[in-house]
Length: 190
Image (cartoon, rainbow, N blue to C red; front, side, top):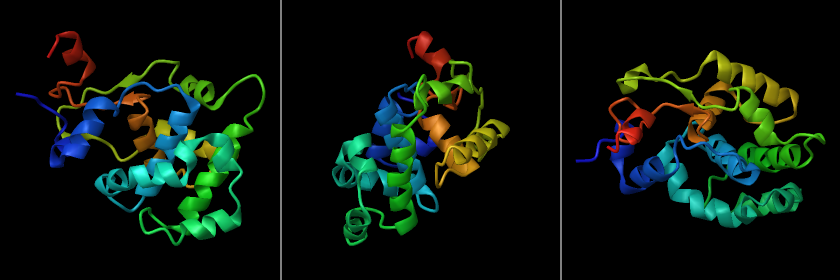
């Protein structure tokens, strides 16, 4: 019998996301950008809703190619606001383009991934929560990264969104200790 984090048991798509992506350390700027965007789309909505629209978002935003998204115009955004296959919140759509521009024009000598991972010393933070009610909505680290991201020009990156992003991208590993995907259980071959 497979044991997952409780939130992942609600649908097959949540199970797939949990089993193949959530909490896995990610260093690729384009993939990090996609996860950041997905987390911004989720604000005020369910993760299931976002996953259901993920393929449509990938089509709408050129599979999150940073250069193509950064070059999108107000006319492109107006067109996307008419696309019922995606979440059409004007501010979230504009944040996608803005955030692509921020990552694409990162100062020389570094990149978004390197900058982000420096907050955790290059290694995922492993929490050892035993129940879902122990999971915080945000943390001091997420508040710090949120502030720093805003200073760099990112939009729609509040502390709760950032904490979810850190979990999704594997900077924070919040698989419950009972979950087969928890690092300690992976080492045991569960």
